[in-house]
Image (cartoon, rainbow, N blue to C red; front, side):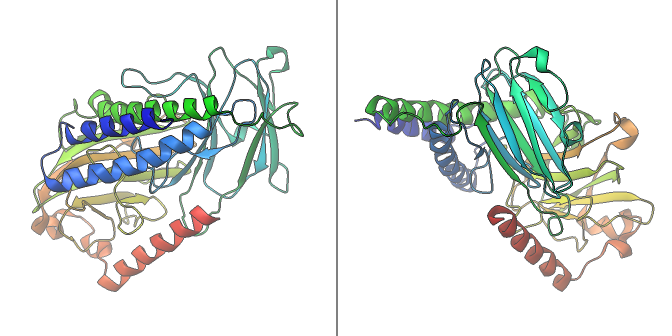
Length: 389
């Protein structure tokens, strides 16, 4: 059977989910099987997108194909490359807060993070008054300069991120890619061997994806003291203009984690929660993430977020959704300077009932149930518009 390698991988993948070290409850397992379904969809999509001579951008992760503590504020796209070919990337710059490009020398694996060979944002490219742009990636170092970015040895993947801060007022752009000289041509007809190979590749992508992002938190999160967050640091394997602060929490239902951080001068600042499967929580129907534009800033210029299971009645509540353990991350993007400890968060765990006394601007932070429902409505419509726009 041509699909047997992929079918075998799905069976092995289910075992990886069932045997995951953090699984304690039926809810953990059900969530894992849902994560598996998204991973299966994504793996098939990615295997069929492995077209380096006739490449196209695929959405790497989204609300229903999550991986790698996906940022709820980002649209992720990638295309596969050859390091000895030239590619033309063109499109229209939308109004999102950040548009960035990154060339990797491979994909994430259970034992390694791929090297970032090139990383830049749209401040380094020429964009016309109509928002149109065109840039090239290729091996010819003599062409290096504005509009031409050299593909280093081993270049395998181009990743593009569009990042929102105000989900309602910002809109995505357009993006396309082709190998230079191949417009007007077409790939050869599909052969049985090609399809069989893709099923095998999809199975390998699926297993690697699951194993990698179960191992990833061990490298960067779980060795940190619980209920703390790091100072801002360059994101491992990430963009040159991105810093992040990471941590993991373990909270009882009557406890709240108060995360206090300055409202940054960075164009993008966002916080999110993640499950032990190392993916975002439901950010469409619940407030499990906030950008600086979405959050309520206290009169002293400080952002105070409350992570809890119980509703604290404040605007900057991050809903745990039954996850007594999980990950928390703050990102700053499109930076023009390095960040220091003074830019980062402080963390305190307090009883939920004490929040009115522990939050210095509690009255300013309060929110009504109708206002909260309005926030959720805004999230649902904004994400729907973003995905279809």
